[in-house]
Image (tube, rainbow, N blue to C red; front, side):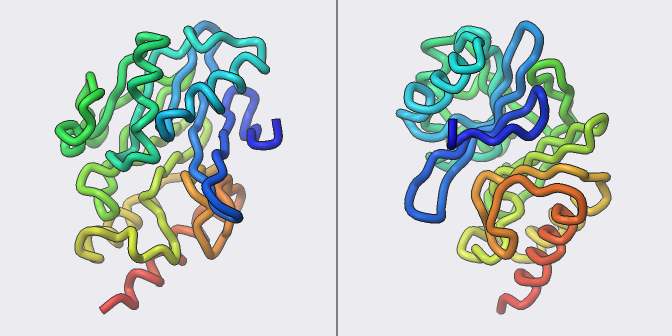
Length: 214
């Protein structure tokens, strides 16, 4: 499927086009018996994108057991209710976002561990875009899923004090990251799946852009 990026044998990124050159993505982590999601997109995203992708892989939507929302925004959480109804999956979100995400079952904190598929991710609290924005870090695979926490030139998405945002990005630089997945193709990279030197370059560029804000 042209809107699906294979990141690893067990990790895929589904791109839902919103307008030319812009999309929102959902990360899918395949386990031997269960499937985890990072974000769920809009109301129609599960039926139009997530479920067809899984069936095309020979998997069943019912295998989805756990969803982590990176933050509260509609393009990341509005598919939650469909996922819960069709699969019974549990929805997790940072405790500061839980009140805004009515479908949430589990409140997360910085440093918590979540299991998606057969992978374990550490929750990294990265306020800046939203108070409860989080990233997920797989230390074993050096993989970081950032949601909208690293937003490049989209300074309109920095909704808190810029110093809070920059501090969150500095925190990410302490992690060994070989693969980074952003929910949107933020500039200057202009794509969502970053590898090799690209994650650090994107984080540092985002910091530099934010530092110039008045």
